[in-house]
Length: 199
Image 1: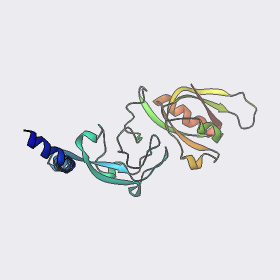
Image 2: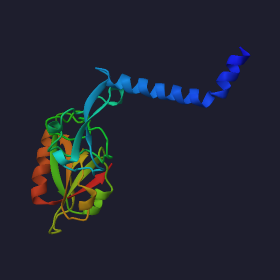
Image 3: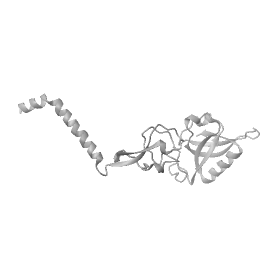
Image 4: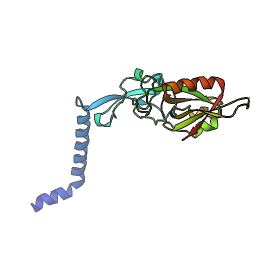
């Protein structure tokens, strides 16, 4: 027994390296087995909220099944043309909650939800918002003849313009609101300047 102990001690580094190599091989082999990996759509680069996805933004990769979140998109075409609901990092998996689709607004906490795009007169307002914020929408008379009035309360910010566009007047913000309120917002934007107040 002492001889075996001495032999193991003398070759401990070699034995440790062999064990580590075997562990890596076993993990790799387990990921390659059928059913242990899953294809998912990921973004190639860091992207800002509001970026409308194109095929050039996206890749499909095989990931361990446990690393793929619920709702992950599996084909690039399912993400193309849809705006990002928030900023993402390169390599991040694209899920149904990371993109906005007017046909699927579940998760915004609004009854009878509709997506409406409004242009905010002061771009500085947009810079202080985050996706998911609840905002009140205030109409401002461009001529200054009428007092500001609240058009809608508690709309949810769904999309924001890319950070590179925040210095442009009239930046578009996607808001989720109940259907009738969304209609009112769309009409108000045609007649007055709009600003947002975070709640």
